[in-house]
Amino acid sequence: MEILFVKLGAMGDVINTLPLAIALKERLGARIHWLVEPLSLPLVAGHPAVAETILFERKRWAASIPEVIKAVRAVRFDIVLDLQRTIKSGSFAFAANGKRRIGFDKARCKELTWLFPFERISPQDPKRHMLLQYLEFAGHLGVNDPEIRWDIPVSGVHRFQLPEQYLVLNIGATKPANKWTTQGFADLARQAEKRFGVRSVLTGGPEDRAMAEEIVRLGGSGVINLAGATTVTELKEVLARAKAVVSCDTGPMHLAVALGREVIALFGPADPRRTGPFKGVVIQKETPCAPCNRRSCDNPVCMLAITPADVMERIEALWSA
Image (cartoon, rainbow, N blue to C red):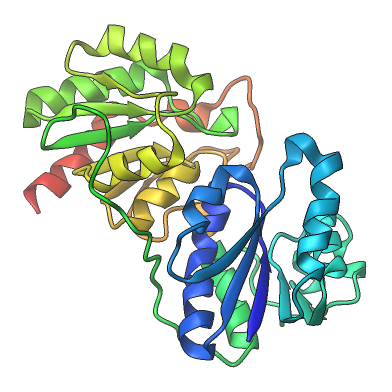
């Protein structure tokens, strides 16, 4: 059975779809083909549940679209799953050479994608965790109660000189409103080193370098700055060896969960029931406006309300467990 996953998007979304791929491969004997964008390609290519990958390069979209269409028409798929719910993903799914095309129910579709003539999964609570929403496709195909696993391979090797035990502070977030404060991370790094003798490793994207440099200045010489310095594959290896990971609502948070790390997630505008860590601890303060799901905010009181003491309390529980 040949199944095409159309799941292009963000790292966290792709990671939360991996249990579906594993379930369909193991329970249906499916060969999974995955249409994905460059950011998440390292997590999909070479994954034991994925037989083939098809790359859509948004930055060179004019050339990439014909390449993708050629690729999705070259195989006769038994099933095509539109797991993205956008016009782009729906168009690729519609163009694919598939016997069955399946998408979300109308209420959960975005960008009028319910207009595509696809088979639809049954309506369910749109606020349940996205990993569970993706697994509804397994249930639709007769695969019930699958084991939830990610099976992301790690090598145990990277090029960075890190201590045997360290705490990862993932400081970035795609949505600015989801970010915690520079001072908060710096104070947390100082307190963790003083209390537990553990150094903090900063991770994030190139856009987080300035923030990371300020955290190092404020947090002291014990802070190791890898923000903007890792590939996705290197980030995976760094996270996999961490004692614990403190992160805002962003893709590396989900990656840490998938790697079996202890995760402390800092949440403000987003609803952790839907996009929070599937396993882990969530810190979210009650504020009148949260969750608002805003991308940016001039006064993010929900994130400002989180204190280093709140996070240290959770770290203390992990260290004493």
